[in-house]
Every structure is written in structure tokens, then in C-alpha cells.
Length: 140
Length: 126
Image (cartoon, rainbow over all chains, first blue to last red):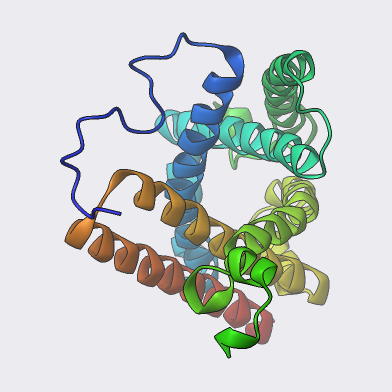
């Protein structure tokens, strides 16, 4: 195997020659959301460090998260998380040798997309109205 | 060693140090762990978040909370490292690949360390 990319053939995932179809979109989204979650892991670590550092640092971190850009990032993170989690289950089922035929794979693709959205909206509904997750939320 | 391998072991065991399927398996084992840990931590957090700093520290510092969080951080960064590694190997070659793989490994390790130390600090400070 050559270590330099001078091969003129198209590289994975062949977006330039394949007709777009749903299983392909989900495969690409799985990798993309994986990268998003990787970036988000930085946020988790900073949050944990702030919690360990003390009340002032934690309050500052929570203010950042509760700001509108912060909430938008958290919303995107939760959507990516649920998508990656559900699609990951689909891959585990495939690994067990089930659901790999075209019709099932197409159907579960849409199921993953719908349930990812439902779970994300469910989490935010619960966070907002049941638990009032953000500090000082009522004053907003 | 190699001459005692059966032909089957020879083709299935190809790869670094003779563990061709090792990363594949670890990626799936950590996936299973995350499948349990992520919903568990999400639900616990949702409940603790609203009560503010003290409540969150009590949850993170509890035996159950710290163990689930430590397990989550470990499974998460191991899973992340393997996933990013596969992506890097797909898109980069040569020196760039080697350097990015090192950044990936060290980056995940350092982030995991900071997370673990933060959790342990809350656990021991009570």
C-alpha cells in the first residue's frame, strides 16, 4: 500500500460517483456526528474541571452554557449524541448478522433519524419544563 | 511462533501484533458500555442540574455517580480514540497520518486524565 495520495481513483466515501441514498447519508452522518461528539467531549471535560475547581468557576461555566450560543451548542451536541447512539445500535444489530438487507436498512435509517429527533426534543422538553435545568431560567 | 499458526489463524490474525480484530472488538465493547452509561448519566444529570452547584457536586462525589462518570469517561475516550483513528487512516497518509494519530492518542489521553482527576477531586473533597 502506498503511503502518499497520488492515486487518481476516487477516495472513500465516493461522494462524487454514487447517487445519494439514505443509508449512505447515515453512514456519513455517523462519522460526522462522531467528530462533533469528539469536539463536545472537550466541553464535558472543561465542565468537570470547573465543577472540581469551585463554585465560582462552576457558575461561570453554567452561565456560558445557559447563554443562547451555549444552548445552541448543547442542542446540537444532544442531537448528534442521540443520532450516533441510535445509529450505533443499528450497526451493532448488523454486526450480529441481522437487518442488513436493503429494505430493512433503508427503513431503519429513517427510524434512526426520527427517533434521534424525538429523543432530543424529549430531553429538552424534560430539561426545560420538568427540571428547569438552566440556572436562573425563570428570569429569562 | 508464526510457523505454528494454522492458515486460518494466519489470515484472521493479520495486523499489528497479531490482533487484527482487536480494535474492531474494543470499539463494539465500548459502544455497549456507552449504550448503558450515556442514558444513565443523562438522566442523573438532568435531575441534579436544576438544584445547582451543591447538588451536582453531591451527585458527582457519590459512589454511584463517580463510578458511572469514571466508567463513562473511560469508555468514551477509548471509543473516541478508535473512531478518530479510523477516520484519520481513511483520509491521511505518510507523515501527516503519523502525526495526527499521535495527536489523537495524546489528546484523548490528556482529556481523559483531566476528567478523571476532576471527578476524583470532587469525590475526595466530598
